[in-house]
Image 1 (cartoon, helix red, strand yellow):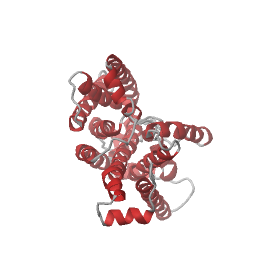
Image 2: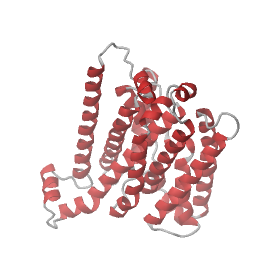
Image 3: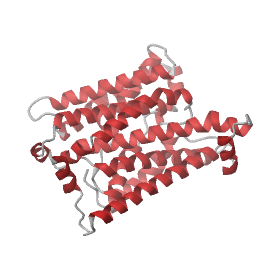
Image 4: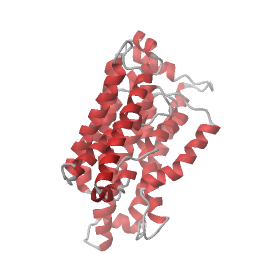
Amino acid sequence: MSADIATAALDQDRTGRSPGRRTSTRSLAVLGALLLLLAAVALSLAIGSRSLALSTVVHALLHDDGSTAGSVIWDVRVPRTLAGIAAGAALGVAGALIQALTRNPLADPGLLGINAGAATGVVLSLTVLGLTSLWVSVWFAMAGAVIAGLLAYSLASGGRGGATPERLALGGAVIAAVFTGASQTLMLLDAQVLDQLRFWSVGSLARADSATLTAITPFIGTGLLLALALVRPLNALALGDDAARALGAHLDRTRFLGLLAVTLLCGAATAAVGPLVFVGLAVPHMARMIVGADQRWTLPLSMLLAPALLLFADVLGRVVVRPDELDAGVVTAVVGAPVFIALVRHRRTVSA
């Protein structure tokens, strides 16, 4: 009942529209995001260094006849597209969680140092141990993400008041700086590893294959399920700590489980496609502009919009400098950042 009260408080509509009409509008927004994602998937499968007609793509998907087009689609573009969907969904939901946990609408998954910790784990596995297996890299990324998350949470939870949003942000900033410095130092000390990781370090879907999907799917699936299970306590948390306690919410448990979900999502996504920027920052903000601050709608919409954005960025990177490619991380930063700045400057920031 207390969670329902919190949800109702967040769901108030100042325009005077009825709850039924608001639900219909939000449902249409989610449907629109799904259609946008399907369009991004179609373009990702059809466009590359060699563009294919949609009819050819559909035929190859339904009838794997061993043709050159079929090999390109099944061996390269399908894994790349699925990795984009998985990593995008993970980063979008992780961003929404971080913004809800810190009550900062401009926070991103890197705020708690988790992305930096995951990246350091990958770099450490290559530079110190010489391990090149993607499966091993995922585990090292997860270990780095967990360590960074636990350190940030420990710094924030010390003293009176526990892990407040302000302390989480400050603790995470310190941890992010430490891990970023460590990973950059390790890369600069080994020229061979630096050359190997220079594309990964800006975020790219180009290396994705079936092994990538096998490695990251369990972690991302678990993180998404955990995030969706937290929507009601997150709604209570948005009303402030005192109000959330009065409504019966368990603040420390919610923040810990939310941090665990962010760790799983960011660790797996970073290991697979690198430390992508902007996606986890802007997409949840846009989702709240569309459907409001209710996490029952913000999380699913972020889960659809983020992979659509990432796939569109990847497709754009394939065509703007043909026959070469721009990494998706470069495109999201160059194209997305100015758009996000315009949104922040010309529209009100929607509270997380």
